[in-house]
Image (cartoon, rainbow, N blue to C red; front, side, top):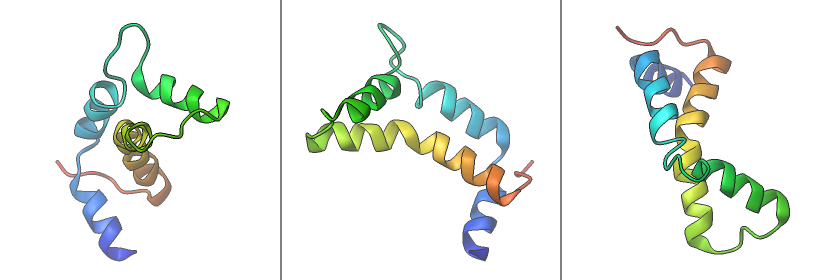
Length: 77
């Protein structure tokens, strides 16, 4: 756990926020990709491996941000 906290502590918040707004939400038109994948997950149609991988890739920045919040890391300068 200390290694994870140390790793997250090295990531500055501005980089995490930019990743959430770009990778997390791209492509923006017609709707954010992560929103589409979450709707598929809720509807039970998220079955193809590529769609599951896509959900994980678009969710990764939000997961990092959530972990930084939960673990209370301050972020590098």
